[in-house]
Length: 127
Image 1 (tube, rainbow, N blue to C red):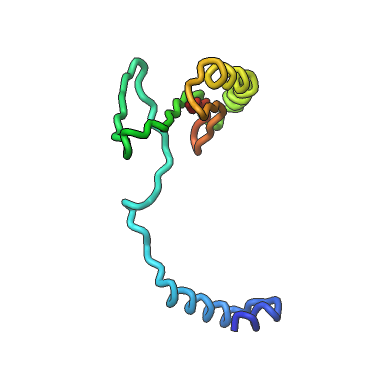
Image 2 (image 1 turned 135 degrees about the horizontal axis):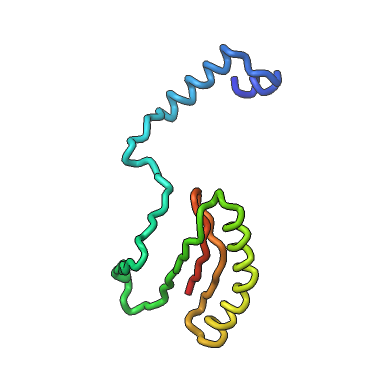
């Protein structure tokens, strides 16, 4: 049936409904519970906040881990913030790598750059 529908170049309503029924009966889709909906949002910590997130290493003998430090720059709808963050990336990328990786040798992987989410722009460092 599927080949026949594609061969004609058109999907007629009756055949499309039959195909839909076949897919639904095979895959048995269900509504995703609201608790499983992924929510994208950022949390702005108040100025002067000092929070620590501790996590146990899977293998304490292996200390090959990294940290990502994110600096919020502003909201995504602001073109000025976007331009400034992109300019900061161009200015800081090579000197950041040179200082943190080459001179200070803080880690095997060192990176910096812009970070964008659904609502915000920022700058990050990974060591």
